[in-house]
Length: 241
Length: 166
Image 1 (tube, rainbow over the protein chains, first blue to last red):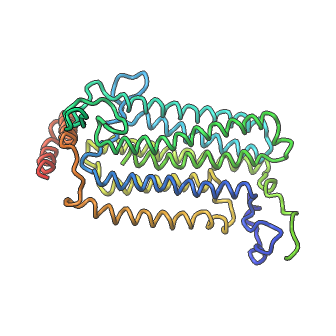
Image 2: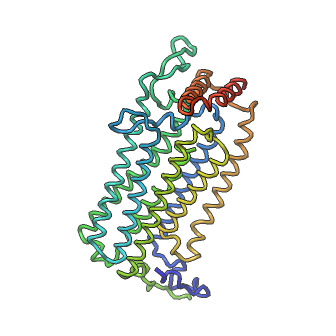
Image 3: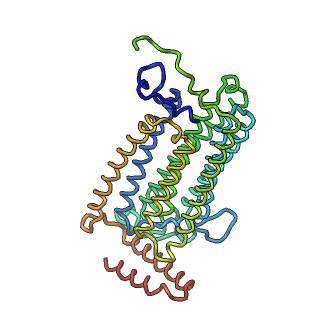
């Protein structure tokens, strides 16, 4: 793709061409992604702030996310590692679909987009599974002071799992941020799967073959990689640190 | 320059490449993938070893994880999203505003975070919560004691006492 770097900088802004050497649609996709990245950046920064405010009582991820499907043992962080692998993998299949599009290879675009959609759907399902276990909690639960409306005071009570008010693993703020940020990301993945599927149908129908280029695949690919990019940060700040 | 141009070059078609170039591009992409996978596995291994070795929460671990995360992010943006192939103008238009805004926000939380983290400015939390986290730490300490034949117990006990003092 050496063509895109060939630019006469003296005349780049004289009109008659894009000084950025990109089409309008792709540029707008990039601008959207920058604004979306600012939203996620803001959320993660605010997460960092609250985490440091409650540093003594912030739960450790390895004590919270210990389940793995069909396995009785506690395997901390194994499942989220698998989820990360699935998402990175689907990012690779997406970029391979984009590459095939650059060669107008319809068959390969179909194959790689199919696997991208499978990977994305698996990731969303895994996240639902993770949420389920986080909400249900452990069998033993944990003691908490919970506000009682009738008595007008706090009473000790055993709570199970996490929701927006109580969290058996630590401060409720952990659950709030976990639900909000992974939920917001999960919704991005879900929309990505839907958009990927629509583009996939168009590829099958031959819309882009008629058009002569597969730039729509590249654009939806940008969005898909962005979703992966956000997950890299969510993974680090929620699970590793 | 005053006349209206509607005969822009077709940038969509310019992205096309040959079979040969495709082969090379695919090799690069797979290499990027293997590197990213290796980084992720390395992070998980270090992450799972951290509590046992008393690395949790240390500065070097945080710096290591954030550094590796930024490396992965750069790989995604430059190769998977092809920003590395775009012209310089475009790269800067995308990256500079983001970097400026985020550096500012990160500066703000570091500044305010230090203020709100001072003992007199801390928010009071349910004492049960504090006890729970202490118990978890102690529990983890026993685990390690069993695994490393009582090697880590003293260190953990000392840490425990110190925390309780606060």
